[in-house]
Image 1 (cartoon, rainbow, N blue to C red):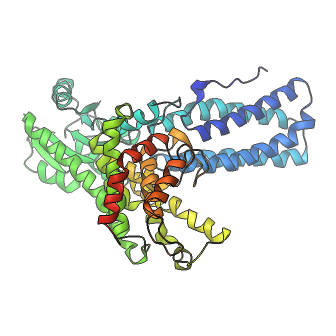
Image 2: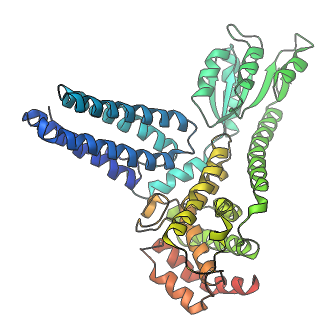
Image 3: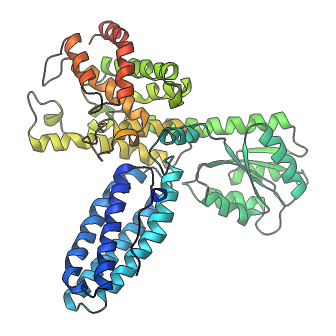
Length: 478
């Protein structure tokens, strides 16, 4: 059997995941060499144990990154099944070594070809990562943030679908088509970022009423449904709305009116997602960290300054004013996970013990988990930024941060901005465990951390803005 060769095209765009995938390539190639030379008995025990250790570490790392994907649970189920299969091979190996090496090799090569090179790349691509570690990483995220709203047109008339497609594409929508309800459901289930449906009522197969019912029977779907039909039944509007449609229009439809109805529908979907987040935060309000109030006001201002300066100074990053505004708007959520940290740790006077520090570090993942749960059920593109800056604002440029150990451009730009703003405010503020540093001391620490803790581009941007940072710090005293 030929050895497996790693190629750049196998990259999912996240360095830590690519490194772990390459470790599996190494294990597979060791096993191939052993099988080809009939020496598998000498290495099989070690390789099996290495694969088990790999699955535990790799799946934990990958699942942290994929938790905002709409098919996250299904991906986890695949991981669990593979881990179970490897464990069964270990059991069989302990009983008898016969055929275990070949079965393991077949299992690993199948996993590599069908999961890593297909499923993983698809999942990471859908989340905005790119196969190569370059400026495309952020451009892909930008593409997700600025992508067109998708509309599914369900009508058995091809001429009606063509007419609506032409009108909707002219208005900036991306249009999908289905001829009847069951075909539409398949598209809906496989298109997680679809949130607008236009449907006729009278269709062969599953009609419009049945489609509305089927959609509303799936509460995880956030869809705004507009019924467009010829009014042959006076009860059709009431019946459609009672079944769960959001709007009803009579053919022929006025182009501008349909456009406005759809735009209002997306606005409502996004408002609902933000309301969910606000509600979740309200539930936790009584357990807030003491570092709120002016701290949150300051980091909002600092992140706004950094984002806007990137627009001016680094156009190659493709930062926009709207993205900068959203990063600033969601920055107060960065430490929402601290609501789950015990008061005796959160408010401790003095240095934390190693055990307490480990507990404190959990706040990033806790906050990320909270927002990712909401994000999977909603259409909010800006909420993606909230997840990133909450989950990853303690990652470091050199890969020594937490909770995952991302490095360089694998760290989302929103989190890189948040990290610098948060650290600057911490350095210049009194905390329960320390006194504030001087302006000069804080600046020196930020500048000296370029390339280790912080993105060098963000540090250079900070140096341009340092006077404004200090001025805001003075204006927004605790």
